[in-house]
Length: 167
Image (cartoon, rainbow, N blue to C red; front, side, top):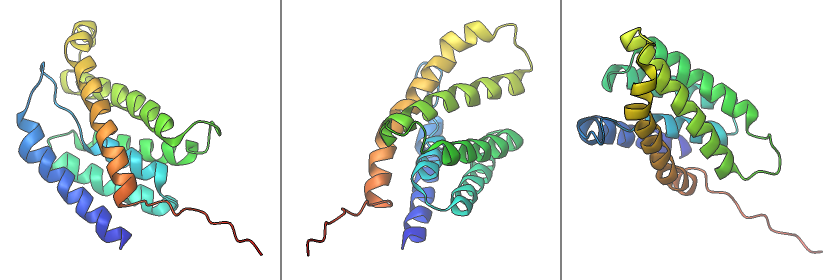
């Protein structure tokens, strides 16, 4: 059942990303809905193999359907999934949502910065572009993460309440 829910989520996110979000530019920036989902799965999934597989599928679809650089999308989404999966228990006393938002913010900054450098092969105007476009893209990605995380957590990764057995 969980696999079906994840497939439905991937299809739904890619439909929204390609049909609606790719044509909406706010302050020259478009939010990415795929990275928040990949990081959310990496943070909540119990199986490393499943987490990386989902990130690879999302990366291939993002590169082919959403117009991302194929190599960058594949490597970045996969490496971010591996890093988040391995770092999800550290720091120990920080809530998962706070970790997720920190990983999302850092990942979005790095992804958008690398995308700009790979697309234009120029770092001379990076400061101006960073202030005009990348800041808004990172803010939109983080806002999308605020919406995606609780919904994915409730629909796919329902946490079972632990019950104490009293004898």
